[in-house]
Length: 445
Ligand code: DOR
Image 1 (cartoon, rainbow, N blue to C red):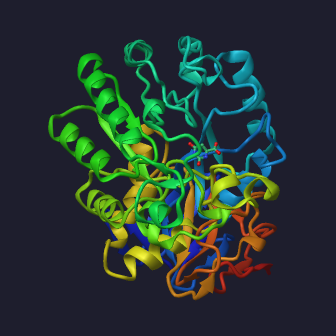
Image 2: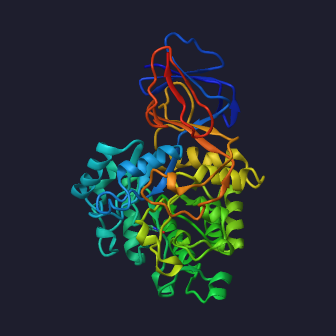
């Protein structure tokens, strides 16, 4: 079935242009101001913005091992609803993908149930235990990189060996940086004003940036491509900025909650508990500055769903992790773009362009011959973040109840409409996107 997207404004060449897009057999076949209809199913975009599908390089899909928190089916449905067409999935699973047989279990679930592209990371160390390297050479052809996310690799010698091998295999190390020797037992928030006011054990920002600093030294030695996960501190921003200026192959991501919130926003509720924690205003502002000057390459949600009872024990007793896929763009647009802090193009580069460059994933351009992985955005849509409507099994987000001024209207993966669900194109039919994520009228002949 040929699809023709019309009435939208298309993000290409760094700007927006009134173009039509024809899609056939999973690919973009033409992009032009006016295209022939000949039997195509026409999708009327109603002034929506068409962008390359978002990529989230930091997502926990929890399968295999923890399907009571999330599954590949529920997590990728959430991704589609959030405008994501590709995800990189973290390996803190059971079994941990530290060799081919274990990776196979994860790949089987992905092949069976994924609604969007999923690229699973391999683990750096066996069982993510930090004691011996995973079977990196066997995993390399199937993974975009190696990560022990959820834990820092504590031993510098182990990290050096991992980087040397990753360099040979031409894959990045994707590092969760956390020096456990600098952690206060039982920490539950950033070690700052909020922690002191409420008598809560705090997480020292040095536990993150000291390990970033160590790893940058190892990158200098090994030449390994190195991507830092969920940076949250101003010191990490400064270290990564300097590493880039030196020409080292270092990149990083941060999350919407670190860019838009600070510890003054915390409430004693599990939906504000994650690792690393939301930090000070100075950290938040440094991250925004880093995004603006290109130090922060990607925005990744660290979508980390848990069961309701695991998040119901306040700041002290809940597990670390919040969900992010379904509200990331509306929140980023509302908090950063509408307020004039960050241009929309910068956000889009961090969501669709840079992740693909860093992890060498297909797509990222709206041009003839490219995969038809596309997202349609409505920037004129007032709504409230309501976790009760999430496809994810996880509901804990610090943005619950926030007013947002944008929505994802439609997501296409390989030319198929994966969000909203159940829209069937028909020849000569017109699919009208109404507004935001309201269900479009489908396939009217
Ligand atoms: O908050 C977090 N949750 N941070 C991590 O690093 C791991 C994640 C999880 O797996 O729940």
